[in-house]
Length: 174
Figure 1 (tube, rainbow, N blue to C red):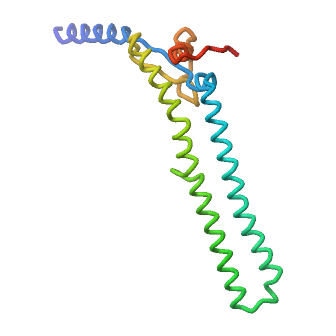
Figure 2: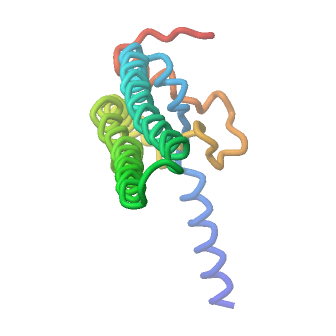
Figure 3: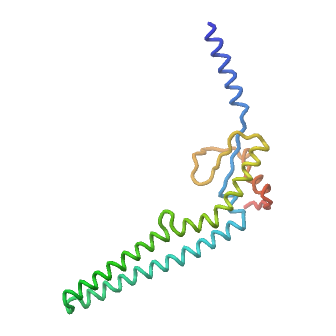
C-alpha cells in the first residue's frame, strides 16, 4: 500500500511539473521572409549560383563540342592522335566534374557562401528566440517551418512576431 501511495504521489508531482512547463513555437521561414537583409543575402547567393552554373555548363558544353569534333574527324585521324584527343576529352570532362563538385558539392563554394551570407542572419534570429524564451520561461520552442513534425500549433503560442520585434523589424502581415 505504501508503494502505491508513493507511486501515486510521484505521478501527481510529475504531472504537476509537466503542466508547469511552457511551450511556444516560431516560424523561422516567416521571420526570415520579413527580414530585408535575408532577401538581399538570398539574392546574392542566387547570383553566385547562377554564375557558377553558367561556368559549369560552359565546361560541359566544351567537352561535348570536343566529343562531337572527335566523332566527326575520328575516321580520318591516326590512332595515336585519336587516342590523344580522347585523353584530352576525358581530362576536360574530369575537370568539369571537379568544378561542379567544388561549386555545388558538400562543403563546396555554395555551402561556404551560404554560411557567410545566411548564417549570421539565422544566428541573429536564434539569439532573439533564445532571449524571448529565457525572458518568458519557455521550456520548449518549436519551429514549424521546413516540414517540421509539428502537426498542430495554436496561433496564440506563435512568438514569431515577438522575435521580429525583438530584432527591431517591423512586422508586415501578408
